[in-house]
Length: 160
Image 1 (cartoon, one colour):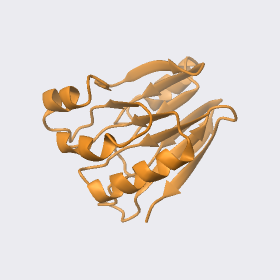
Image 2 (cartoon, helix red, strand yellow):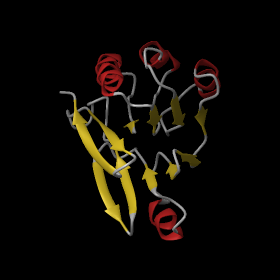
Image 3 (cartoon, one colour):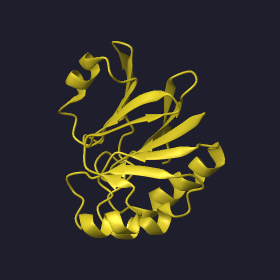
Image 4 (cartoon, helix red, strand yellow):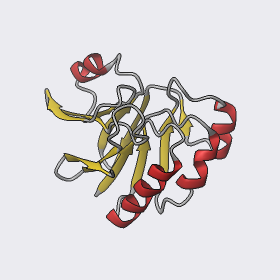
């Protein structure tokens, strides 16, 4: 079972549409967005997803009330904690709690964004993922991540 992880879309609808197309063709069953949608109009591209989306607010998300409304309440404050397909997952935008969450031994997967730099690593039996920047504004490399929940392996997908 695959899930997709995106972050830091920062209103780049072209890259978001490319990612949605790849995610839809991958068979992913859920998308997690680690913040910085930026504007509510990103729903235009994300409504094309063939699977549900759960997101959190990032530091650049402007109209949080309208974002929450447009996404039918599936965007949350951080940190967001859930169990998905038997995997304990924590998601935040800024990486300020990674070590504490990892050391708590309560999570299988920790997702974060904010730095715009892609990271996939296993640290103390926890899969830690930053999908990078889907917008491509900062580093010029638009990326997102896919995770296979059965094998607990992730990969960075470059859409440039």
